[in-house]
Amino acid sequence: MFEFLTGVLLITVLSSILLLLLPDAQEEEFLPLVKIAMGIWIIHSITRIFGHSLF
Amino acid sequence: MMPILESVIGTVLSSFIIVIISTFMALVLDFLFPSFSRWTRTFLFFIVLTVVLYPAYEHLQMIRSITQTVATMFISIYPLLTGAILASGGSFSMLNFQPAMLLFANGAVILADKVLIPLLSAAMLFDIVSRFHPQVPFTKMADLLRTSLIALVSASVAAYSIFITAGGTISWAMTGVTSEPIKELIRQNIPLIGSFMTDSLGAIGRYSSGASVFIGAWLIITIWSVALVPTLKTLLTGFLYRWTAALIEPFADEDITGILDDIGKTLFVLCAVSFLVAFAFIYTALFTVILVKLITAVK
Image: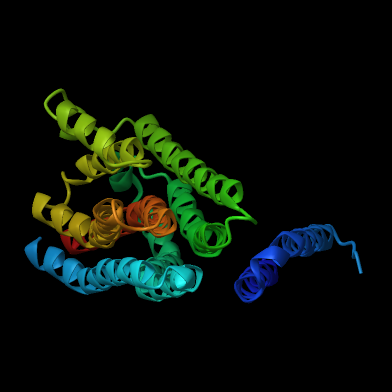
């Protein structure tokens, strides 16, 4: 639980800082990457709850 | 009552004034440097978070330490109470003492310590994340956590009250006709947990009325106020969050008011959790007092 929350927080903070630094034009391209990262992290955490490992 | 009010407002008000002033400063900065507005929003968000999260976190810690204290009290007093009930025989049957209640209350305290408070802080984190980064929202998760917490807590309080009324102790005045308007007022004016509050107060009241035959009314009032002070403090702080959100809404970002509102909501749920702990505390304290009274009366 704690690891999952830490991961979510890290992804959010890092991606929002990157979004601030990137120019507006590239923002559209970067957002799907953030969503993919969050998705991978959530799926990884859920599979680990049930004793499996994604990686 | 007044010193509590003053201490709560004194600790929280300064941080809320910082929030109001910094929101206004951000407004002025936005007007002066429009191209800088995204950075201004981020900085404002961090300032508000650092200032505003501290009182909420302090309340979480407070309720947590109280639950731990109550849990220790239970574990130390449980064998003593059971032994005394066995020894005294008929005296306790007047009170409809149910040992299952003690187990129940203990379970509730452990539940609050191990499950409710971590889940509540997780809900708060999800709220912050979804406000800070609206493209990756977690609002449904936070809402789910909060509503399931309330469901869990009210289910345990309902179980308590079933146990108490099944024992057939005397009904207390709070359930009477005269207090009905007050209950309605509380129910409508405290968001989320209003009806839960009146119900659990009624349950506690029903229980302590049976015990007031043995120990004086003043002692019951003392136990009540000791148990309910943290709850009242949390409730008041939650209201201050919502009040600040309402005050800065016209000139602040949607995010800032939203986060204040969300933290207020979370504190209301924390208040419900602390009710559970307060109930457990009242139960143990009453029985300990009765035990001491009985022992001294026999001598």
